[in-house]
Length: 121
Image: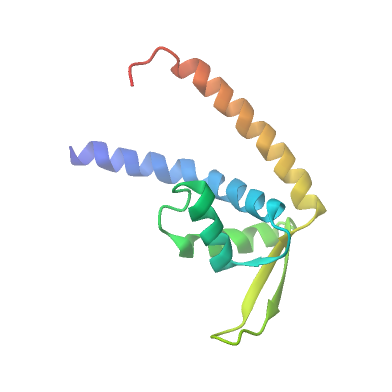
């Protein structure tokens, strides 16, 4: 049984690698104002039903990577309660990439649904 669990965890890890980036861009695209990490994580918990699987710390490297790729912009603001907060917002290039990723996601989902059709679940 342990081998099946290890295979499932590996599959879930590989699957989540791209989906977290897609979900982060989507959350920021829908936001009316820049958000800091905790608020992004809370929005993902509220709407994403387990995208982060309780690993909020996993989103910070992804946010940095998305910013490094030129898809997000950020700024730091002081906080009255705790350390300064880094706020993120999606830029025009990020919105263009998000549109491409959504199309790719939809095509992949549709293809997989066709392949999986009829498989006992």
